[in-house]
Image (cartoon, rainbow over all chains, first blue to last red; front, side, top):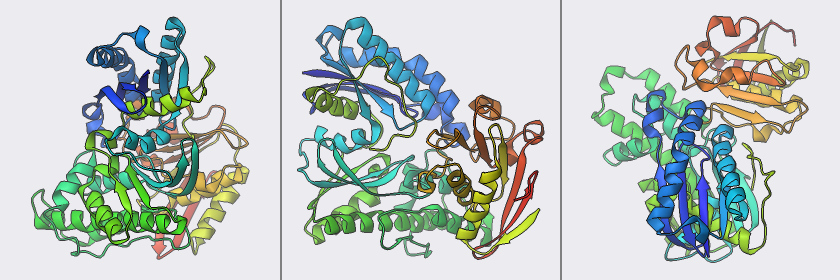
Amino acid sequence: MLILGIDTSCDDTSAAIVENGVKILSNIVSSQDEVHKKYGGIVPELASRRHIEMILPVVDEALKKAKVEIKDISAVAVCHGPGLIGSLLIGVCFAKSLSYVNNIPLVAANHLEGHIFSSFLEEEKPEFPFIALIASGGHTSLVRVDDFGRYKELGRTRDDAAGEAYDKVAKLLGLSYPGGPIIDRLAQEGNSKAIDFPRAYLSGTFDFSFSGLKTAVLNFLRKIDSSLLTRHSSLIKDIAASFQSAVVDVLVRKTIEAAKEEGVRNVVLSGGVSANSALRENLTNRALEDGLRVYLPSLQLCTDNAAMIASVGYFLFKNNKLSSMSLNPEAYLPL
Amino acid sequence: MKLRTENEAQTKEAGYRLGKLLKKGDVVCFYGELGAGKTTMIKGIASAIGIEERDITSASFTIIAEYKKGTVPFYHIDLYRIEHGSADEIGLYDYIRGDGISVIEWAERLGEETSERCIKVRIACSNGEERDIEIEGVEI
């Protein structure tokens, strides 16, 4: 059974063809990074306009690469939230039109559910129950997953998302957008113990907070001679490494604690921040010590993509959870 | 008017009192540095109009966050990443002064003609958790 997935929740236009929820035949992602670079982040209005231009060629390419035609598709799965409302609207309107014109069933997938289920597109599939850490530019949540459609949110960020903290600190350091990969690269050559940035463990809850860390980096930068902060200085590498270690320590500790408290042996990492090398390494090592099993998504499936939406769409379609032509996108859409 | 809050809870409480006085079409401009407590105070405003405080997080990533669960639509706008004067490009004017209440962080980046008829909140970190807040356009 073939599902066409469409995701336009943020700044990437993506379409994918997935067979039986697990086998990717094509997964096309058109990145808008170049469009938003000069703003140091995503500008919603520009993202919507770019989605309009890209949606048709991206869907065409997904079909072509999978060597299938629209008549071979069993259902169209579209991400209807959470995300930027103007961006979501393009994908939802397009999917509805495609579904109506070709008389193909429509299903609506949650973006966060997509991230969780991107792990099912890998060779090794996680077993239920598992703890999912979703960390990206827009989200940071810990979720217990007992089955398809059975989720319990254990915690989420109270202020900045982990990826957002990376972008803001990158901006403070005069680095470009997106901040994650650049800081990760600099951090690998820096000393993570050089500066003792605060770690908000927020005891008694699985919520996160990264706002104080961002302020601590700002206060540190105010005290130093900014002329020393050049692109290749050891100072900038030490700041990057120390900041990264503060973020990763909190993410890893809370995820491991959540697994222990819930009595769950499997941990799934997802979202754009799961491409971070330190997070992957530390989580794997800590899990090993505690006898937990970690499932890391391949780099292509960490970030936003439509294959994960098609995967969720397959389960929805199989369970007969169809959407009607009155489907509307939702900017705020909890699991 | 000026006031000083001693901790995060009092800063939220000041936001709550301000939120209770707001009506449809009102726009509140926030001025203050990173970490000054703008989002904290906005959590208070949101709770006054029936939105769960926990649902309000930073809006820097999305720039505009819409909340429809309260008594009136609530628009949380964050211009941190926007260059001065380019608010036009982000579709800001489709949201403010319409059917809901809008709060704008980093309002320094708005043109003067836009912020002219707004309630203004200036917030600064004085010492530790203490904050100095100056509100213009309404008495809380």
